[in-house]
Length: 87
Image 1 (spheres, rainbow, N blue to C red):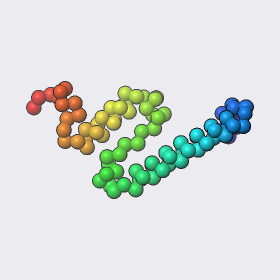
Image 2: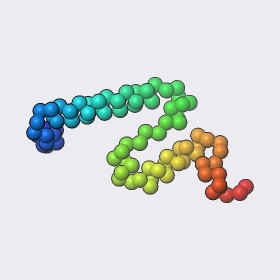
Image 3: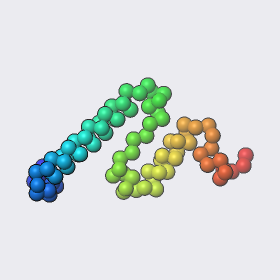
Image 4: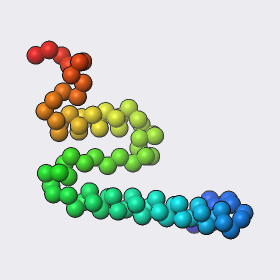
């Protein structure tokens, strides 16, 4: 599919091989990290938020807002103590 879409535009074999190796290694590492997150005990899994780059780039304010909410739920201390409203 990637060849059909002309994704790999390198004309030399070395450049094409390097791009494929980079993409493969990146995908392998991502899959490895996701499997680690899936195997965490439930109490720790709640502390993990997986963010896709595509979601972050499409709507950064919403994704960051969601991240801050998750972070705040998992911590007793205020996220920004200097800016917290006095109680």
